[in-house]
Amino acid sequence: MREQISEGLKLALKARDVRRTSTLRLINSAIKDRDIAVRTENRGPVTNEEILVILQKMVKQREESFAIYAQAGRADLATVEKEEIDILNEFLPKGLTDEEVEAAIKAAIASTGAVGGKDMGRVIAQLKADYPGRIDFGKASGKVKALLS
Image (cartoon, rainbow, N blue to C red; front, top):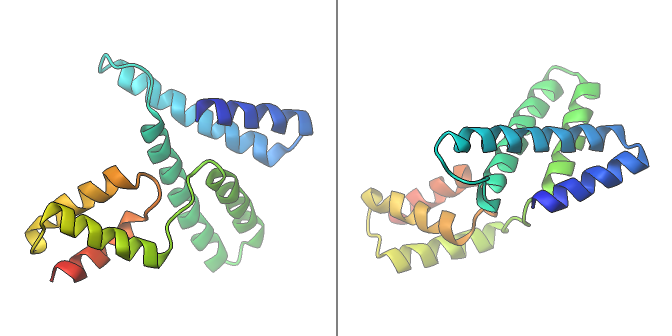
């Protein structure tokens, strides 16, 4: 993933795409910050899974900002956030549809043997292991809870 992001940055610089360049630099900066944080734990550089988490967090932050700007009538700032979301999403794996999420949840429930609400954590952990970066776990947790009830 680092190579994809670096290559995207090079192309953006050559194309003189200011928005794309700044967004990709923000991604690199966040990854380097995380590298520094894990270095204190005597680990190597961050893994692709950790980069996915960083990108998802960045998308979520921008979605929240987009909603605030749109509600406040600041179309100019909302447009900037939307463009950054689109650029970030290019590096994330394709998300699952609602039907696919429900099927994945049912499969995770079956594989973990979950029977009630107390087993929700195991189901979510199984989903995170099987579908990293492809499921919005904020929405999925409600569906898991409903299916386990």
